[in-house]
Length: 181
Image 1 (cartoon, rainbow, N blue to C red):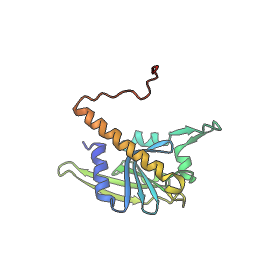
Image 2: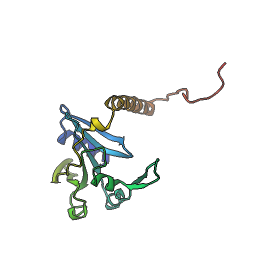
Image 3: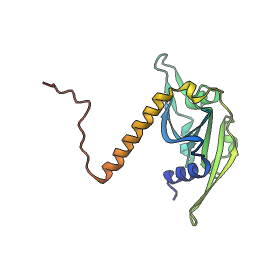
Image 4: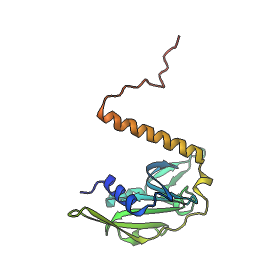
């Protein structure tokens, strides 16, 4: 069975241009985590959400958040479809034939994949390109310097996680509020 990490690896290494695009995986933006986030040189962004089961796909349309100022509740895909979303485009990456394309909202792109377990080849098919949700650059909506600092911190944290799996690491708690003399 193909693991999600293997699918992500196959997609970004066959479909993305690392010399022209910034490619992030499992990146939190706005109120949700992007499985794959691609930002080109002009700042045009494309979020790709991976769904491996019908139930996971259906649950994506139940995701919501509450505006902290107004208390108003918004569904994720309502925000995306009206262009009130940080990314310029949004697509689903799905196993071939898992969901009928007529069930997927028009604002969403559809990318299907077929994985051959015998050869370990994974092929990707653009079924429907995503609609452009708005014209604003990702960098107009996000602080680029803060973005870079967050990326650097995430890399450091992941390095420590990986290193910690191979050897015991002991860190002082930076939030320890003991009285200092």
